[in-house]
Length: 326
Image (tube, rainbow, N blue to C red; front, side, top):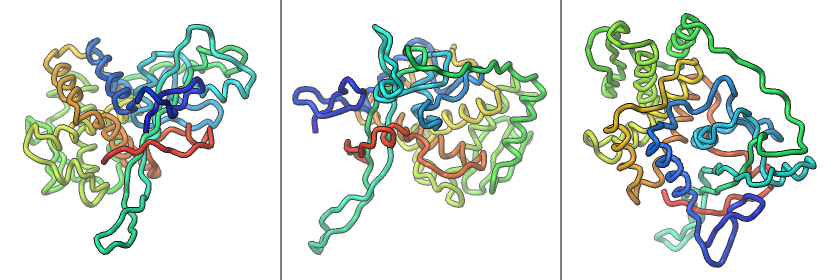
């Protein structure tokens, strides 16, 4: 199927050009990395609020949070082109829309070996365009309340609460090793002592990283990238590391303990640019953000949902139509 975005912001059928939502997402992330910014380090800004659709009130999740934060707008409110028009507003001249995606699964009929139809799980992805409140006119938005950063002891207490309230947690061994790790065989998170880190942000960021790994255990989310993890630096291992990086950032933002998104290590940046830039890895960033959102929600005790799905398809009444390979 040939797809390109129409003026209303939905990726629709055209005769000439195919627009791959996976490539659009990956290119956006790589562009940030090339600027020295790790976009998942600060998935959203607490002083602005988590991005949400203004009409439905629903928050965006997973990769959509990261994509929208890349635009650095000082308003959390977003609307589709249709929603702006329905409210009597318009888009300011010269403004460009931002991409969000709807990603999930559905059952499709396939021919079985015996000739009968059977249902098989398949993936879909569909892209939409949205505009920030500050890109529009003629629509009244509420003022964004000022949220000052909490004192260090309050932020530390938030981080401790997230760790201590994790449902069905693994065992913690803190201060017994100089290296942080998650041991799947024994279901143990190993952490160095907090004083060995340069800052509380580094300590809790690392702790959250290992906790995200732990959510993949068979007794929790049974995540393929953990339970089928291959050798160090292998393909599955690298995707699981991306899940842990993003999930840890989601938790850190919840606690208001955020590490600098401007990465000083050129090797770190080049490493992810190389991995994500490979043709057969272009789906990683969407899948990893989806799994990271689910992992963070598990630790926070929130109900399970498709963490990267956008409410856009419900807003337009359209059904997802762009299939994605597993």
